Image (cartoon, rainbow, N blue to C red; front, side, top):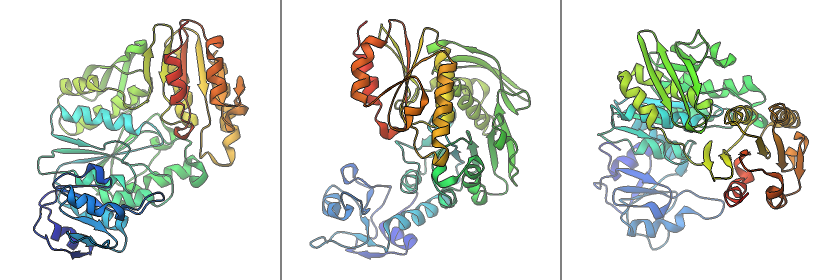
Amino acid sequence: MIGMTVAKVAEHTGGTLCGGGGERPVTGAVRDNREVAPGLMFCALPGARRDGHEFIAAALDAGAPCCLAQRVPEGVSGPVVIVPDVAQAMARLAAACRAQVKAPVVGIVGSSGKTTTKEMVACVLARRYDTLRTEKNFNNELGVPLTLFRIGPETEAAVVELGISHFGEMRRLGAMARPDIAVYTLIGRSHLEALGDRRGVLRAKTELLEEMPDGGLVIVNGDDDLLAGLDCRQRKLSYGLGAGCDVRAENYHCLGAEGSAFTVVSGPHRFEARVGAFGRHMVYAALAAAAVGIELGVPDADIAAGIADYVPVGRRASVIDTGCLTIVDDCYNANPDSTQMAILSAADLGGRLVCILGDMLELGERSEEFHRETGRAALDAGALLLTTGELSAVMGGEHYGSKAALIADLPKRLRRGDVVLVKASHSMAFEEISEALREIKL
């Protein structure tokens, strides 16, 4: 936060300050009282399990300059800004904080690849600018404000991940973040229960453009048919492997588990780049980062160095060599498009391919069709397909009634040197399978 005080928090949120302390500086905010530190306001959000109001006293004792809350608990005398709705107040305050920022804000949007692209863009910009990025999975209506609150006077660029699952959410996120540059990764088949089909996904995600300035820049994956045809009032650039993309990769070489190498080409810019992370989708993230870097004046050599700096985050296509197996741990989340891309990428590693796949959630009425399609993709790649989960039973291959049964059978099904892809929606908790694979000796 820039120049924020407790009194200004009350002003921007339309709240009422109780307990004084209006002059106290506020440098950021948290929604977990265990993360409170001097300068960090505590947002007392009501929850399904615990109500944040229960922790207001503890937050003030830990040094919070104030709390944002819907009521003052009995016995609390410290500064509390009372508002009708904490989440809505956070959104209003986030928009006010964003309005003070002169540094460029880059919004990352898409059905998959958002976190990878966000990290890659941040790595590139950090080579030249003091760059703030979204932490953890703070990409929704409660997380984006916390990211914007962290922008300080030293911030020279901000990279903000924007995630949605329903119509209207992106418009609200856009009203907070108001990015100068929007990067679109992919319009895929995710959250179809609410959004219907890919065109519905496109409509929902492009709500952001209504909140961007006319002079903004929209950077799209030019190999995605819907994004390539996107019409917007802002300037538009494309990236991808296609010859017609404004920023493209040439001379692509898969280096197996070591990543990939390619030449970035964009107008007068031509330079060699190497991604040290596995997967074809990493090339797209690198090209998106290159497009942002070129736009914001990062020298070509620094763009290449920033791409090389990238390290995979949290079970997103991490490659683990156990000495017996090569595990592709990609179980953070899954939809048909990201899973089929992961299958192709895993096949690039050589060795016998084993795909351990689970349910892909929120796919709507065509869920069974998409699961069958994904199973066929694995079998067409020559993989041994092992599945578990109610929805994945239609994929083909060998289905197990539980993760425990699948894990117990793995030593008999696997061979030394196998490449094993593990992927499912996050709630399937397939990290249990990844951990079990690490312990197998063949």
